[in-house]
Length: 503
Image (tube, rainbow, N blue to C red):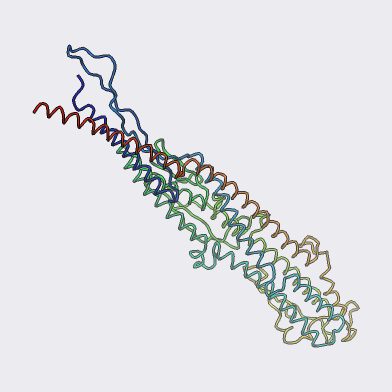
């Protein structure tokens, strides 16, 4: 015999299921614009069927359904799409960082105060040409010195701007305070915050999952954090079978395991002399002591490490700075060599290095920053060796043959250290190569951005909330709710009638 309240229970279950579905739909609609929100779905299933005994005690054939029950509330999410998104996000932010730094370098190498290095080189050697024609004119000699000072100033100005940019990005090992204020340190600090938050969410997710519930909102929050982490650097994400824990690893080093941050990251000064090869002025170390510079190859941090390093063939800040250093060192060395072989206005052979045009002091810094205009020359322009000493004798104040040799250095192609090209061609090549690499990097960024856009469209199609679709489902479950309520009222009215008959 069927129990008297059988219909009540069925109608009640229908009401509860419909109300639960409406609550999920309302949550989808109100949360549609939340960052990282994944559309939630209610999973409904049949309640266990009921089979009753006949009056004779035998089992009746067939079963009676007991309405519907809520199995779970799941989220529409695809981990494979996430993997693709984060991988390409690594590339996007890597090339964005490179492109941004290269644009700043192009600005520095462009036209400081309206004059390029090429212009300054031409101006200086034009003054040398003028000196060769008027070696006995003190004003011409003073102009030569003034333009030599300007040449050094422009080189050092651009070199310092490049060095300042590098310090801003990755710090300067010789100035510890710059390490903690660098962009690299800021990014690493943000990574540590993300690791802390992921570990905390892992703990909450595991706790809620152990009760049989689905912590969908927490899972969304964790995925948003992992997306942000992919902007910073490349890591390996390892999930357990039920997705309660997400471990984060870097080159075999565990950063997060479950609810524990095993290794934090820190930025420290790179010990040793002036960096060479792929060294950076700063290191990224883990709590376990591992240095992970070379393990981080993409993301914003990867881009900062690349631009702050001196990887061969790359248009890094230091590589461009080294090219400036090589060029000025060659110009200064060539000029000083001619200065040492000529005669000054009084017919004397200069005493070197006291009477070099450009003085060079010893030190660990790049030569560019150790050069200065010789104060003896500045104070006494007659010391410029404009005259020739080829004959072994002074041929008069009007002799400007050595100054002519200085002027001809501008078009010389015998500079082996520069690749046997002129000074002007060398700096033009440096700027051109920077421009080409900057353009290529910008193109690679655009490509990554377009791929991200495509992946994100797939991600949104799979996980985002479609308001029109939600409204259709809302109407459907409202109708289901109304039907269950009517059934409940009908049964209630029938029971009231029966009870009235009994009374």
